[in-house]
Image 1 (cartoon, rainbow, N blue to C red):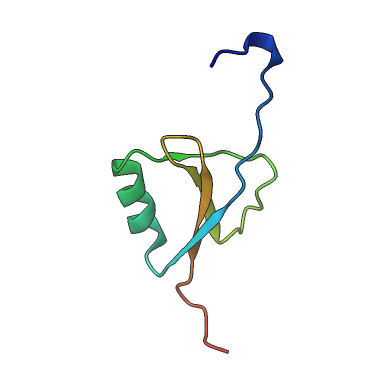
Image 2: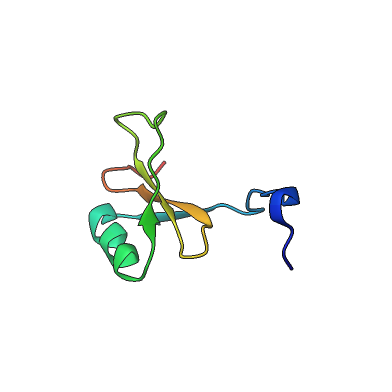
Length: 71
């Protein structure tokens, strides 16, 4: 279906958070599978997450758990 200028983009209904002890390795694996990084100007410099999108544009975060203690 084509709707031209009348289309409204709705945000995804879900957001996944993926937790890993090897964030850089997991991000690279996901990039190799077709995901892309999403840049966000308000992301804190010390954030423990990387925002990514799958090939269909669904966003998700890869969260670094290395160094977190069990509570």
